Length: 348
Image 1: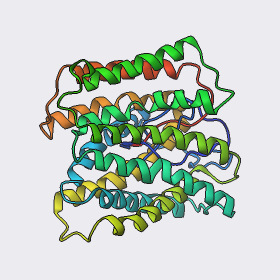
Image 2: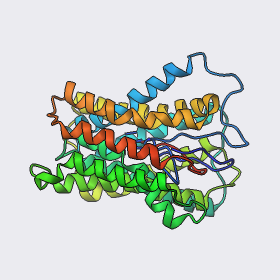
Image 3: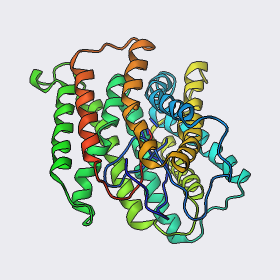
């Protein structure tokens, strides 16, 4: 699941999306997350004419895609190892963006230095958070994973105060940071001593959310002004993330005995929709209605993820989970006030 995009600042995929669920990762280097919200650079990756569908319909579709990403991760891990889920989603997402690049006649970026920076971005925005969310959902419900993903703007603001000298704190944003983490403690039931909570799974989900703003800040410092389009940089980044996971997966998992239908469909949908198509939808939204409106998708992702987990997967929900989630979102909104340029969105 952020902030306005400065010209010629690329926006690789993130998002927690997961992210976003949701693959996808939108950037907010100073505030942050849930899924990518790219803005076309001077070499626009968008067609000259606007899409036929009303932007509100596309906004709703994007919210649903990224909101359901955490459910798809949960279903995928029922048939595959976490690294295999991540590899499958990256393969599918890369395929979608490769087709888009071919249709729009986009070329991969040039220069070993650019590819080196993209490899680092792919690790922090794709390979690491996607894998952490997949491992986390082995032991925590998808609802909790979706809410943890909503903390990315909070981590982003905290890090930007240290790493970005031009991003000065304001009272409102500092208050938002404190309010947001108070919401996290509410979600986790801190007054109960975190009883019934799987610490390792929750920690991995929170680390995944922290990984996104680390990647955003790195990209902002290293990949601005490369001359390549956003689509070219994002597609190349996903490709490098796929290669990274492809090298690691055989070391920690064995080949699956079969390809169960439902988990396979979940992984393909997670990649093709949440890590591929969603990025293209976000391109159009940012171009048509601007990053400020497009980034509002961030606030719908945990709501949809919670509803999907409860209604579809039958996950239990105590009162402190939705209440804490609302507090987290309120804090995230405050941290984004008057945020300076950067990218938006975190793909779950």
